[in-house]
Length: 90
Image 1 (cartoon, rainbow, N blue to C red):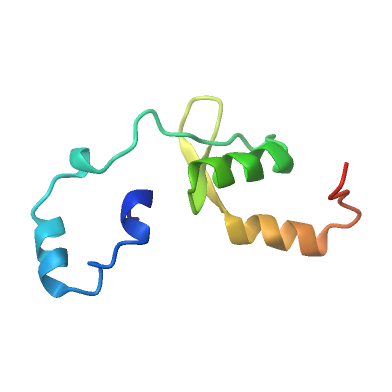
Image 2 (cartoon, one colour):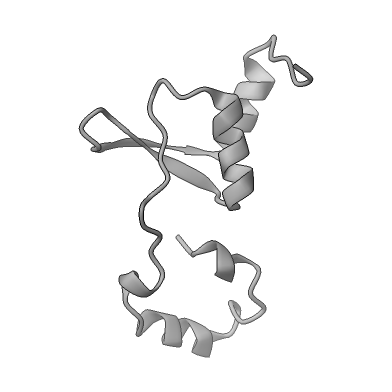
């Protein structure tokens, strides 16, 4: 996964840029603390968080903080399309 700051970078297709990135450490690009969701999280606030943070998705954790899944923007779109009625204007 790339940090949001690199997602729109013009340098990504350049192989030299990739070589530079591979020489860096995870710490240089990681986000901490990690935003995450619980299995009981409501979809609307989760969607807002993804939009506000410009993230493609979030890990889903249990009560102990162990990762049990991942929810993506496309997962939210699937829920919107397949789980009516979802009040978009409420």
